[in-house]
Length: 312
Ligand code: RBF
Ligand code: MG
Image (cartoon, rainbow, N blue to C red; front, side, top):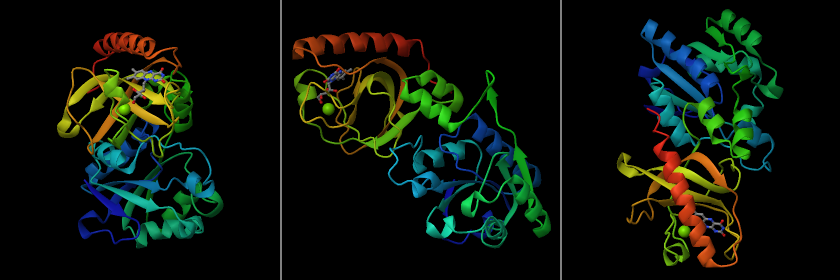
C-alpha cells in the first residue's frame, strides 16, 4: 500500500487507475461504499485502485480556527484504505492553489496529472473553486475527456444517512457505539506516549499520556478502552480524557491505564479505541476517593470489554 502525494508524479504501475475521490475521514459505511465500488471496478478491469483523500481537510483550510474535528490521521487512513483493497492512497495537499482550481481544471488534472481511467464519488461530492463542481459536471466533463465516472448513493443505517458529522455528534455526547456502528470500527486515537507527571504511578494507576492533536474531542470523561500496542498486541483498559480536575495544571490529555500491564511505553505509538463512555471527570475530596472510584471504573470497564469482543 503506497502513499502518493498530489505534488509528485504517479508512478507508471499506478497509472490508469480507478480513483475513489472524497475526503474519507473516518472511512464510514458511506465512504466504504464509494471506495468498495472503485476497488470492485478496478479488479474487474485489472487496474490499480487508488483511494484519494485531502489534507489538510478542506474545511480546516477555509476555517483555520475551528476546534479539532479529525476522525482519523493520514497514517490510520492509509492502513484502513489498504484493508479496503486499495493499491495506493493519494493525498491531495489542500492549499490555496488547489482551493483556487476550477472544477473543470480539476477534472482535467485527474487525467493529465494522475492518469485516472475512472473516478467514483458519492452522489453528494462537490469540488473545485467555490465548490463549483458536482457529480453532474464531473460526469459531463469526464465524458468529453474520456474519463469514466460513477456516483454512489449515501448509505442509510436505521433510516439515517451515515455521515462524518453524525459520527462527530455522537462522539461529542459520548456515544461510542453509534460511532463504531457507522465506521464499522471504534473511534481510535493514535499517538505517541509522552512522559507524564508520575502522579499516576504514585496513586497506583500509571497512565500513558497521549496528546489529542487534531482529533475530534469526544465528550470529556472516563472510557472503557482497548489499546493497540506496537507489534499488534491488544490490551484492555480504562482512560481518562480531559483536564483531570483533581490535578494542577489543568492540561488536556488522553490517559489510558492498561489492565495487567507494567511495561514502559514511553516514546512508542499506540492506538486507543474508545469502546464505552463510563462517567464524566470529577473532582473528589481526596486522592483516596479518586482511587476508589478508579478501581470501580476498572471493574466496570472489564465487564464491558469482556462483553465487547474486538471487531474482526
Ligand atoms: N483525575 C481527576 O481529576 N478526575 C477524575 O475523575 C479522574 N478519573 C480517572 C479515572 C481513571 C480510570 C484513571 C486511570 C485516572 C483518572 N484520573 C482522574 C486521574 C488522572 O487521569 C491521572 O491519572 C492523573 O492526572 C495522574 O496522571
Ligand atoms: Mg499519566
